[in-house]
Length: 147
Length: 159
Image (tube, rainbow over all chains, first blue to last red; front, side, top):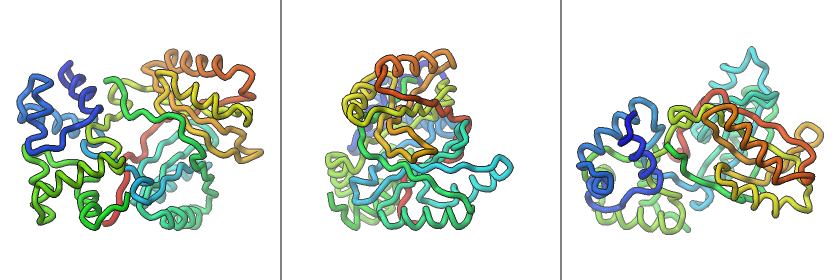
């Protein structure tokens, strides 16, 4: 990753144009051609520096729901349980954390009822209690990280 | 916002990522059998309404050098939680800050703040700064560092 890659990541975390030639437009600000920007994005995605390039959709604003949940997974069952949890398309992301609550995941769906169903399924398929940590209030959410 | 049937199709076609083609909205439109103008118009409407939070790059924290990603959780006085949540959310290094329910006695924490450090010392200093702001309003805290990304796809609908 070079300085231009870092600039691309910083600039493209702030937004991306909706127009006929968006890469070309975004590239101009960076001093690149549209094709050069596309090639760099392809490499950053392939290398895993970017996990995604595209719209971040807001489940709640489309009438759906989001839920943070946690599990206390016995160490010897960790990979098995991760496989079960990750198998649900409603699981948007999942992190291992160093704590007795060692698995934390976010469920997201355009259908709030499916969230309840997935929780029941995870409990049934793992035999573990799902600890629900719904948002009561959002004080701040940033969508950027300095590259 | 009530999303339309076309919006839903656009979401399904783009939720995993946008095409890396020069006229990407034309590519999406061709896939859906509608005009590029319509795709551009609906995506702009969804962005305006906040159904799309933003369009752009989603980096892997670890690959940017942020090795120490901590979910800091705090047991904060209920009477001051909103005031403190706002203050913690405004700290420059906090990326997310939420109030969530306690689950007593197992889980006494009601304030969650995410911090990201390139080193253990940097993350520890961030935690320390939050502790200073909360002062006696916090009766206890823990930091849950992430050690592995098990999944990071974002929202997926349909399919």
